[in-house]
Amino acid sequence: MSKQAMIFAAGLGTRLKPLTDTMPKALVKVGGQPLLWHTVMKLKAAGYEHMVVNVHHFAQQIVDYLKQNDNFGLDIRISDESDKLLETGGGIKKALPLFDRSKPILIHNVDILSNLDLTALDGSVTTLVVSPRQTKRYLLFDDDLCLRGWTNIETGEVKGEVTNADSYRKLAFSGIHVLHPSLFPLMDEWPDRFPIMDFYLKVCARHPIRGYEPCGLRLMDVGKLDTLHEAEQFLNTL
Image (cartoon, rainbow, N blue to C red):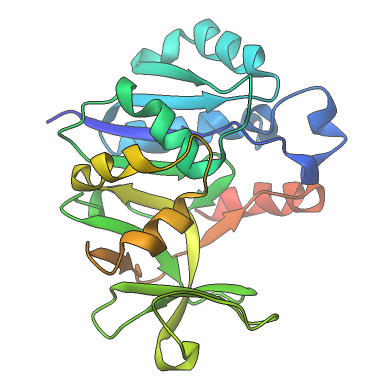
């Protein structure tokens, strides 16, 4: 069965300035290759043949890069957000017509490097890849690793159908998740622009959204200029 994935590449990459003053974050190089190359190759190695890349900031550069490389022998399509950034949920909603709506979609941020085995994500249920790493914002899961809420431990803010965040397991989101097709129709009533996590938190009481905590997960968010050298070293250890 052909597997499908979406790569989030539309962000402005403001934390990678001044590099992103002249190029999209997706084309910033780590270890001699753009972040987009690393993500596409990881997905390809896991058997993903159909991909959608959303674009906004210096969109044409990404289109040209893929064209120059013959889409790496894959079926890669562009979801163009040049007019307006749609955030993560809106980006998925806009891209849905480019997918087979009967199959799950693996979604991968372009700036995430990891040792995650993507073949472990079978798509039988909406799944969020998580880890216990330290952060300010955590997803809240029950004992069965079902999503129940979200919290910012610095401000005390809580979202979802929870009142006491301390009653739940706190795990950090990785930027990698699988959206099951049973949730696609639920997006119809949402606006053009919204964060996917708000959607997940709204529907998780009625539809199963599970956390997946891989053993030995090593992951790096290449979001800031000072992490680029670290990222090269990280790649060498994967």
